Amino acid sequence: MKTAREIALVVLRKVLVEEAYANIALQQVLTTWPAEDRERRFATEIIYGVIRKKNYLEWILGRLSRQPLAKLDADVRLILLCALYQIIFLNSVPARAAINEAVEMTKKVSHRGSAGFVNGCLRSYLRKQEEFNIPQRTNDPITYLSLTYCQPKWFAQWAVRTWGMERTEELFAYFMQPAPLTVRVNTLLETRDEVIRNLTSRGVDVVKLAVPEGLSISRGGIAAIREELQSGILYVQDEAAMWVAHAVSPQPGETILDLCAAPGGKTTHLAQIMENQGEVIACDLYSHKQQLIWDNCKRLGVTIVSAVVQDATKENPDWQKKFDKVLVDAPCSGLGVIGRRPDLKWRRTSKELKDFPLLQQAIVERAVTYLKPGGRLVYSTCTLNPEENEGVSERISQAHSQLQPCTISLENTINTDEYRFWPPESKTDGFYICAWENKI
Image 1 (cartoon, one colour):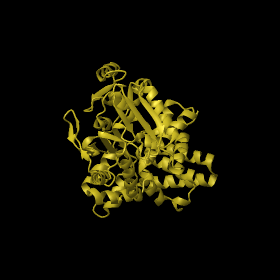
Image 2: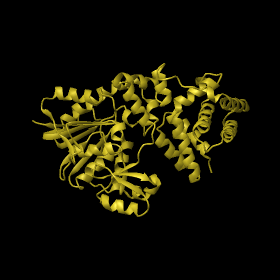
Image 3: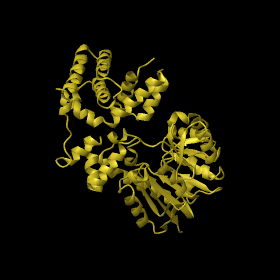
């Protein structure tokens, strides 16, 4: 049986060295390696804690180590980050235990000299921990934001330029909070009220969301709904993401294209609203992601989806003027989901914020040609970058006079032609949605 710290080291190596996605790497390791549930939970806490607070922990380690961090053995550096996280943030772990375990693990992956180095760094922190003071907000606001809220410095600089100091700090503080667990009820199998009755009878705290199929699980967590997830009755999805399918306004019998579909969350939601009547073509660039769409459809009982491999920027002659509705849930920088996917913030660069709009516009330009006269086009992202959101939608509107903005409405909660989800206010991921009608 593997220990939590062994699991954490392997996963963090995959994520922070080999640039794997945290959720996928963790799932792969937990599937491969046997471990007790307690160890799995502890490993998950260490992994996501280190990823969330990576730059703050590295800032401390950089002051403890006489060697530049870039020259440290990768495993030794990760062991130190894990130990520092436990010492600083986990009151349940005695500092002595964290240090001893770090030293023993270092002996397994490196040499005795490295173990002494690890021991020295960590004991030095215990002696000097009062000396590690983050620069004050007034003296160095960017470093203050970066270290206090554990965000890349470039992102803090960009955010302050874009939204100002107060709004940036509001957003970063929200990203530090645990992401809410929200799920979509699969109404092809059960009604929302039926699910609520079943869950509450088992002691699970459930709150209805404004979106008709949405629920928030406030007590019990993922373990309490595992059966419903496996059977396809529930699907984990952020509330903002659930609004996207409603913005499309799918109707039974229609033909709909989901142009950037994997893993199929919005695809299956469209089919669900359509009551499994009509056709949804869901495409993605990669065949392995096509399989993800098929797997989700099978689990949720969706029968009207055809998953195909297609480069969304390339023309498909068979799709010209074919679809009643087209959804472009575009590839984006993902700045709106950093609270839920903390590894993403260490992947992104400021350059990508300029590159993504070019790709997004190319995809939407292609999508326009697939609309029937009178058809509806919806563009959505999970980013907060105005250039990827309003910038793209404005350029599309200017280039295509036949596209007229149309209303996004749901139960009187949203009634506009574009909508921005600002996480501290909406208590959701950051999202942008807009819609047009093809007047030709």
